[in-house]
Image 1: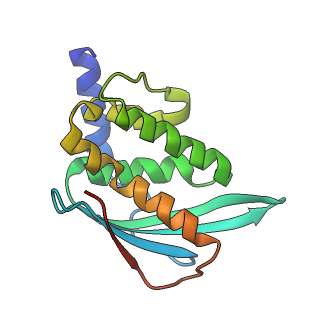
Image 2 (image 1 turned 135 degrees about the vertical axis):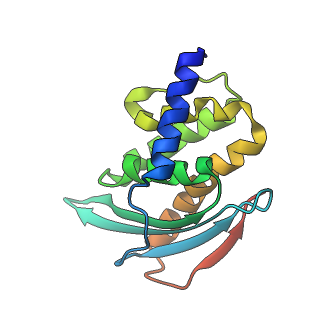
Length: 162
């Protein structure tokens, strides 16, 4: 990756960190989870609100409260932009695309059409310790989404990913 591209990606991450989108826990929600990265202490509490629209489950809202490094917080902001308003199956496909990028150790070419600002994390994938930071909110979202259909507004569940 070129130095100019690296600088652009760093700028995108810092912008999402300094100006987070959809931050702050909101009601209503069907599921809430709390995930911690024990390696560095990053934490995220994330809520998911799903709705039915014309026979399709749609990601109506995702809200979060996060503490941690710029990568983990920026990733939560990017996640919300990418999944809110999408049918659940499309949002899960975006999740899988981001997961593939992060697990690719810097060898996966990101699809800008799918990941939009998420492509900025391509450089992060080269650093295994930082991948956990980038994936923290995505894992919380996937867990909350899985619970959303069956556990309306239950207390926070703790999860540790290391």
